[in-house]
Image (cartoon, rainbow, N blue to C red):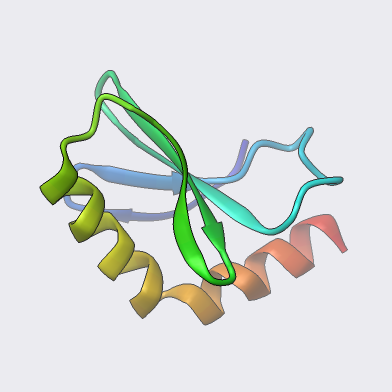
Length: 77
């Protein structure tokens, strides 16, 4: 599972066995984890993040959306 970006306590990564799904990113911070669709950015699942954290994460994803999509295409081809 390659880590694409680290910002503060957030790690943004892909899971290598998810090729058949639409582009998305997993976000991990300690025991918390969420999955966000990349286009358009939105929460797919959440395990432990509070709503204000999800809002912050979504803003990060929007800022780096093009980079994440490019990394997705390079990784999953």
